[in-house]
Image 1 (cartoon, rainbow, N blue to C red):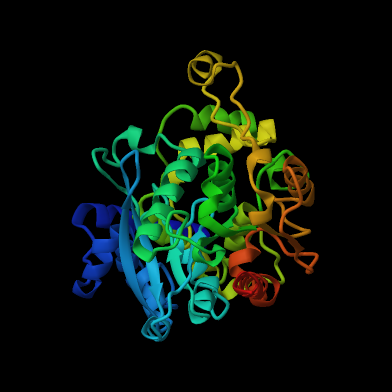
Image 2 (cartoon, rainbow, N blue to C red):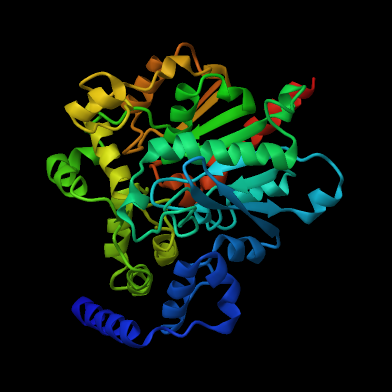
Length: 433
C-alpha cells in the first residue's frame, strides 16, 4: 500500500511539474502572502482535504477562530524581509485601552502557525482573548519570509545564516518595529508595564538568549522573557541528540548552503496527504514525534497530518550550527574553522555566548521532565550559567511531557498556556501596584 501511494504521488509530481497545478481564484490572497502554502493547498484539494487547518496560512487560521489580523513587513539590518502577523481582537481594540504587546517566537523548522493549530488551546488566541496585542514572527527562510532587498532564495548566499543571525537581526528588527507601532519599549516607557513581553519556544529561546547576551542592555525593552523548553546547552546525550550521527551530518550540511529540508511545495503537501492515510499514521507519528518529541498520550494522532503541515524551512547552516552546538554543549558563535575563526573572533575556537550578562530577573523558565532536547540536565546547566536565579522556574508536573507537546499536546492548556497567561497576569498586576 505504501509503495502504491508513493507511486501515485510521484506521478502527480511529474504531471504537476509538466502542466502546473491550477490554483483556485479564491486562493489569491493566500498566493500573495504565501505562494508555498497556496501550492500545497491546491495539491491537497486534489485528494479532498479533511481538515480546514491543513496547510492553512496564519491569516486563515486567525480568521477561522473569529479574529482579524494584520500583516507587517519588517526589513532586517542585513536585508531580509520578514512577514509577521498581528492578531486583532476587535473587542479589545474597540475598548480604547492601550494593549500590551506580546511577541511569540516559533521553533526550528516551523512558522507562526505553530501557535495557532492546537484548538482549543492555542496560546496565540488565548492571549488575544485576554486583551493582549499578540504579534507572531516568521523568521528568515520560512515560507512567509523568503524576500530580501537584493538576494534571491535561489542564491545560496540567501541561506547563509543560522540562529545567530535570526536572534541578532530578525528578533531585534521585529522588536524595534513593534516599539514604533505600539509605543511600548525602552525609549517610550516610563513604567515597567509599558515594555514588551516575549515568549520563545525551543529555537525561539536560543534566539532570545543570544540577543540578550550579545547586545548589552537590550533586555530593557522586555518586561518578561518567557522561555518554553529553554535551550542553552545540548550536551546531554541521553535524549534525542544521542541518536544523531553528528560527523556524517556535519559533513553533508557543511558542503553547501541551501534550504532545509530541501523539499518542494508538492513534497510538503504529499507528506500531509500520505499522513492522512490510516495505514501510514503510525509511521508519520513516529517520524514527526522522533524529530520534535511528543508524548503519545498527549498526541491527537487523528490530526497528525495537520501537524505535519506545520513543518517549514530553515537553512542547512542553521542545522549545522545546531550540530556544532551539540558537540560544544554551550551555545557558541558559528565555527568556521581555525583560520577564519582567528579572522572573525581572534581565537581558534568560536567564543561562547556570555549568559552571565543576562538579567535573570527578566526570565521565566518552563521546562519538562521528559523533554528529549531541553533535558533536565541541559536546563540545569543553563541555570548554572546565569549570574542569579531566574524570576520564575516552573517545571511541568506531567512527568511524560515532551518537547513538542508545548504546542500540540491535548493538555497544553492546563500544563503550559494557563501557566503562561497566569504568570503574565501576575506580572502585570504587580507592576501596577
